[in-house]
Amino acid sequence: MFAERLRELRKAKKISQGTLAAALGVSQQAVGKWETQRSTPDPATVARIATYFGVTADYLLGCSDLRSSFAERPKIQGDRQVQVPVVGSVRAGYGSLAFEEDLGYCSADVRNPGEYFYLMVRGDSMEPRISEGDLALVRRQPDVESGQLAVVLINGEEGTLKKIIKKKGTVILQPFNPAYPAMVYVGQDLEQIQIVGKVIETKTRW
Image 1: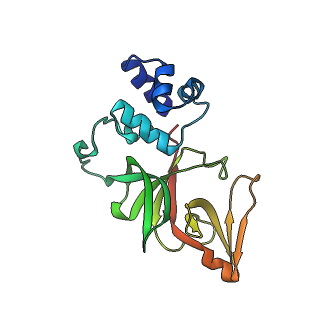
Image 2: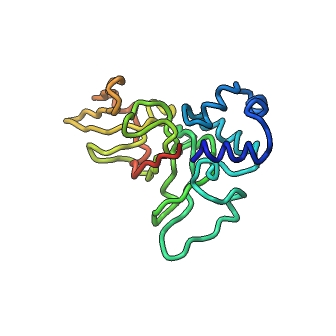
Image 3: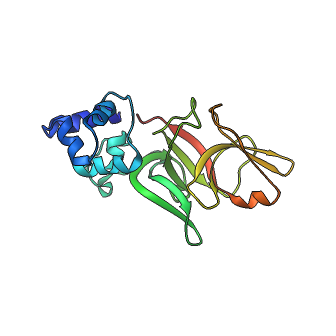
């Protein structure tokens, strides 16, 4: 969806890949790869592209067919579809969580939207099940059961999405990609990690 909408927006504006690349400060080759789905831009660049074309990031990501501001979104009657914010990263803030890189909104079938957020996945540590650029719907909660997916802060830094495994006072952050090692925390090391929330589902947006 992203590749199609990027290409459509560029052609509607009647600009070349080179012109768009120059405006964004990237190479023409990068724009070409985005439009052919051979690579994806980082969340910050997605936001810049949306701003350049005067659309919302969620339109660009395929979360909505509305190109204009979020305030114009119609309410959907008869179901629980609501708009949940999409963020590029999560960190520890001053006494709470800091959500960085506002990327717009995407719909979700949830009862209490204030308890949820979407996180744009970075990296390939959760391949092949979850890919870079996917959106993970996260419900804010301080703990999860063993075997569930969660967003976790390590030493208060940027949240990482991993499978949680609990064994006799030990917490293991397990990636799906075998190229990445599991991270094991036991004893005082457990103080280094903080569960932000449970991953309810993921959506492929590229």
